[in-house]
Length: 389
Image (cartoon, rainbow, N blue to C red; front, side, top):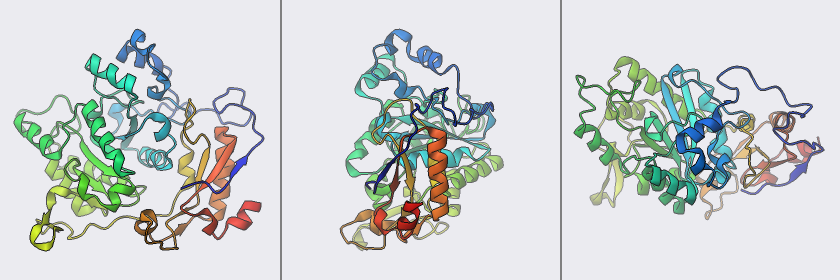
């Protein structure tokens, strides 16, 4: 979606400048304040000499303005959003930032981020035998409880597999199941010293979301434990809460125990192992057990643009400006348009919410431009009056 217009403000300071006269002070709370050891942690992980040979090491630093640094042991369920593109592309994705904010608002959930490394960093990780890590905590991706990988277009699917390979996580859900069974992770007597909150798992639950995964999840079902269909703002925090409830009831819950509860409880969660394509029905997908929905239904919600204001990157990104979502879905019904079809119904953001988000975003981030985002901004009914204001 292309922005309808861009607005240039009169702000002349850098987003992270200490001389910014109107930016608020960074919170002193340990969960939201910047990590003063971010660079030294990265050097310790990779070595300062090796890091000096990497292009744009800030891609892997984390610690941006607005980043959330929760204590690893202060929560019960830990998410990692692994974007299957380099940092500059991932940080330009509005949904990536929104979902990061939604999950970190939950007191018992943690959300960290990771990005597909550039070729030089990928080679360094392989040379050091270092699994891909998250930018805030510097923890390996396989130490998290849930690993989210968005699929926004078909040709990006191979990047998702590259992420899993660099993270040292088996590519398919069957391989992950077999690895856990072979290592005895489901044996209560043996336990799991490497995972304190989910000892029944050896690897995180790997799931996909995004436009392409929602439009047709079947080509990706072999690789993901579940697929989130539709909007994630309300779905993903619920996924975390349900997983926490399962672990409260049974700390040694297996992968299948957790997935079954998610499929039964959370609208929009599609668990491929509980369904099969039936050749006699022209490969229509049918459930293989009666205690789950016959047909998963995607979730929808009204956009919340204020949640996209959370992060201000340190380096220039592809869309280096404030992005305000004003509408989701479309009323035109063009048959060639996938997002216009699968994102129905059209949902408009209240004009006052948009204006407040613009003022707050420009004031607190220091961006010199903002753009309005939707499939067709000119169809937003409030555009003429709100644009003038």
